[in-house]
Image (cartoon, rainbow over all chains, first blue to last red; front, side):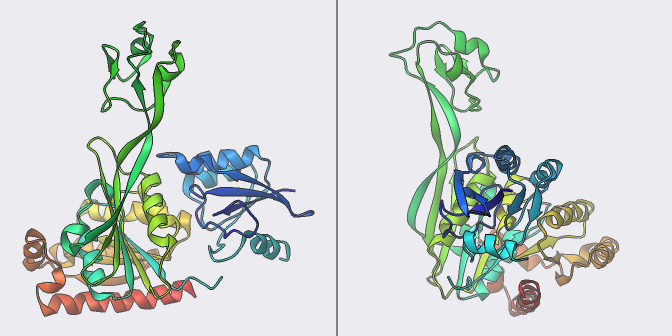
Length: 106
Length: 293
């Protein structure tokens, strides 16, 4: 299982990004080992359509769960069709590792 | 990391011209510990009322554009034949017509086309007469507002925000497109300014549908509510069905228009208006408190 987290930086100590489509990084985390891959979000550079582009990216990375603040309309549709579980409502005041731990402890 | 100290409110409307900027300016005049951001970049005009002093200016690049290097160009004309926007003539690219697709760059066999980020405008960090920070942007002709720009200007405004700031006031763009999505993506509450017209209520509904996908709470201000009581009642009923509170209604007042014409804050016009806006602000504070906790 892989968990994708929207992040403001490239490490597990970075703060969660509440934005999905225009977050700076995605951290693709393996919850068993807590090893992660930091992927910079190409969607952020799009004039328009950042959400779907970002969705494409994490779908290609094989994530099954997404932890984030909020997801817009088009991105949500793409993620749901790919069977990715969206867990939203995470605040930009917590670290990525704490978001992952809080999800796992649920 | 402590919780963020401030609440971020975004003022939106769907329909243009309902009073977003007027209300934003009035809120800005009443709230002391604040940062104000104008995200209506296509028609930025909050600065006309708030009278800021620019401290820093930053370049903004919306996307890439192609340029032909005449020293390398062998004048084969291939680029001109593939350009769907007729932007290439006589081996030069008209920057206003170039849509930044990059097709010419890909087909050029002599490596003569540069395809780099182009400057689309600037955004400014400013100080208001009361010492608060204010951010707004200006784009070149032909360049439009985008989610990218809205996100960038908001990020800059929030990156070194002082811990005593209580409110971030975002004057949002009209519509329900990309820039609106970007302006609500990181916000605590949305204030929707509407008016009792056919297009006012129509666009209000579209906006509320959009906000549902973001799961963000909102409250409605009906501006000029007494101009059409039938539609005003429809708005009240709709709001009740949607469980969206009406946090204020402002009667039509020609004094508003005078303030706009003179580039003044409506707060300066008369005490009644100040009282009305203050009442809305109290309602807003209440609603934001409920939605955040």
